[in-house]
Length: 327
Image 1 (cartoon, rainbow, N blue to C red):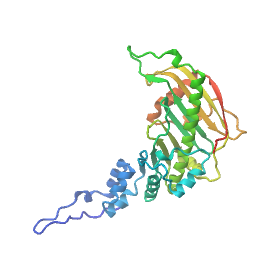
Image 2: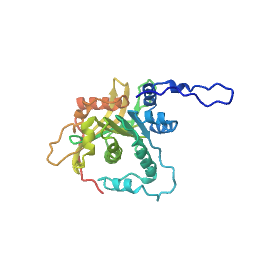
Image 3: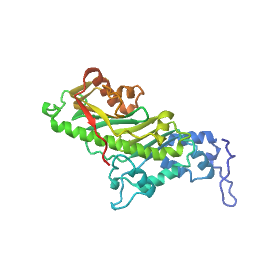
Image 4: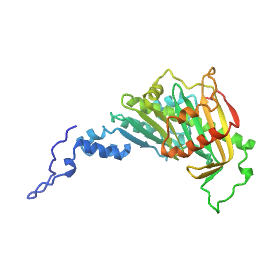
């Protein structure tokens, strides 16, 4: 990119024209600034400043896009026809429409088409999960991996002399606690799958440039991650369907001390769910160890530390059968 010469601004009669100093910046430096800005909404606003800004903004390689909860009180308002048909084909039920602003989403997706050089994309959608005991979740989908891992805890704290002691009865894996966490884990997996479909709807416009994409919830508790060209190609392959059957494992530890993060978890539960073909052999760790080899982001350090400790010191407490999802 080449920078135009700085243009003087308009002035009144008898006054010397004022030079707009931002026009002295080369395009490369402007692009660096816009890349640091990152926020897709603000970048779209910047693109309206001038033709030059518009050209440079749309070369931004990294975007972050966030959607707030729906503010409309009209619960009968339908999603745009294209998006509605897209979601209705999902094998899993869609989240409450009163919490997801479909028209806003469709408008944002259309505005992103102008960004022609996006390499990394992060989208934040409203969180629909009501279970406050969920600390973190992580999901990845592709040809060789359809897995979601969820971490629960009755409480988590850093130990101090005055730390409140949790009763043992609150951390036992009772039948009620077991059923509650399994239900929440299944709901979390369904929402992760829905987010995968949403991600596909966005990624298809950037298939030639994109290298990594993720879609997280507004609570920052979890994300669906697509890393590398292979996973992105799998996401866009119409022949690849999420298997309807699968299996899962559940680990439960009443008291879990984590030396690196210096945290103590009471009533810690890890649920790993994997969708597979019926003829695939089950893994003792449900394939989570393979997932962990890919590394993790800083905000997922607690989850990965828990997984490392549990797999080294504990056997699964329960095996789960995953039935075909209901339409």
